[in-house]
Image 1 (spheres, rainbow, N blue to C red):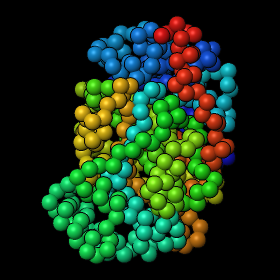
Image 2 (spheres, one colour; image 1 turned 120 degrees about the vertical axis):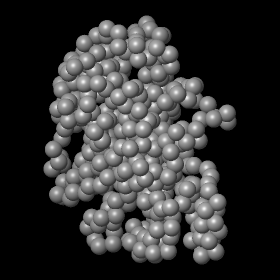
Image 3 (cartoon, helix red, strand yellow; image 1 turned 135 degrees about the horizontal axis):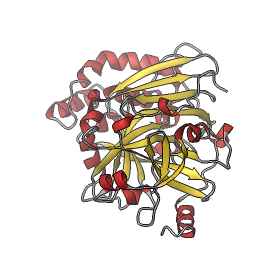
Image 4 (cartoon, one colour; image 1 turned 180 degrees about the horizontal axis):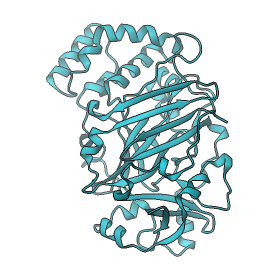
Length: 395
């Protein structure tokens, strides 16, 4: 068990202004043998799953979503305090409800290298070929040559093109610089629908990775028509050694058992919470290990190089549609370089690390790191969901 305090009280995961937030989530109901869509009423969770809107994806297609959520009666399934306390699988009573990631059929997409700080780290990974002990030397060289220049470059601009040519001449160009300051954003599939874990669940790293880290991000929820519905928090876990050896290993670096957490709830956009709040947000990260190691950092969305709305448009356009909607992880500027162990080796996770991601208007997402094979296997996918909903006469 980690030395970190594990969050067990609802007030510690909810937005600071929870009394005016519209929150949607998902809970596993053992008495139904499957998931339920929930919303928060005071301190209680209401099951609002019903025929016509049996999934979060379908619910986000409603034209009257806000009015429907305001008036829906639902079924009281318990206090959020109790359900949160039962959501950590190592302490879970499987006969009682627990929290899930607040999405279901939506595609899980992620935008890469959207901050200059993370862009430089991707270039370092590539030049280091996945060797963590070379990171500090390459970082110092790159920051001396291009760090201050890149911070002022608008992706896709004439200035960016001039910078590209100059870096090519200096033999410093990289595929990551192409998507960081070029005209096309990097948007990739993080994991399969239904595979993301929720708050208090374990987050996974591969046992054959020796250089990895969390990626705390804001996540946008978008319906099939491209309408932005709301936002939540996410952890886009990254295996830096795999991706550094080859960008073609990105699927192996990103899509593993329990390697993506999302939650705790999706906060819907309304008069009290808008995309501008996302643009101004600061996302805090804290990592606490069994070895008394503590690392903190902040990712300021004001420093993002591509606007969130532009990233949504880069994900879905006339060339690419998402009939079940999608969620988009917006990227992070937080790439830990603090040594953990031998000097120059930088940071890497250890099993038992507790990762806490928070921002006032979205709340807190906390997960404990375990090796992927030690995390519960993903067995409830789309086909299982459809069978369960049919058995409950919801479809």
